[in-house]
Length: 266
Image (cartoon, rainbow, N blue to C red; front, side, top):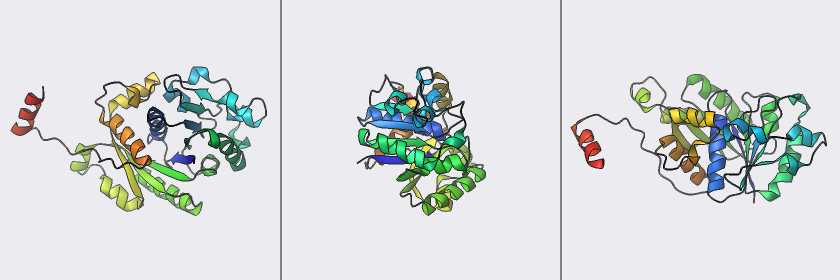
């Protein structure tokens, strides 16, 4: 049975689209058939993060206008044959998209894929309502900031009202040193406020920016020692029901024992 998951946040700029790209790529690497649906009509970015922007010919809007078939709008990833993207439009009005349109498109895609991940736009306006229209489950992405957590709380309430369950939490861009210095909310603080099941914690990693600019999700890097990449992969495995321990994100002390460990590890 196809799992239809909306990835949302409330607040913009928390890394929701980055999470979508990396989770989708990891699930495809695991052998699943995955469709990524860009629900951010008018401000699409998912194609850029996947490095597929130059291969977009048609978008969901052309499909709905009857100008092409749905399969013609799907952009297949050459690195992972099991992954496709249904891009959003940048040029035509997003107002023409309705929840019923989204339900129809997702319904047409569902028989062909194991996972459909819908990248929701920021906010709780019409774009959000469209993105959640066909969803069965939700991943809420937030950073450990008061404004992001408050917006995420509002989104959780709307998801509950729409009977989308389960909703799970991803805490993104965590900085352990700032948490220890009481300059950032801890994962426990965020989880307690939002009261939804935690499925992943992604630490801050500059390589995420580098990979985004290259149009290559971080999880594709071979021999990567990126903890963020490992966190994305762990989330994908947890989505599939596997029990995966969380990364140890405690601050490493620069004491004699730590230095000795580094020496003998070389």
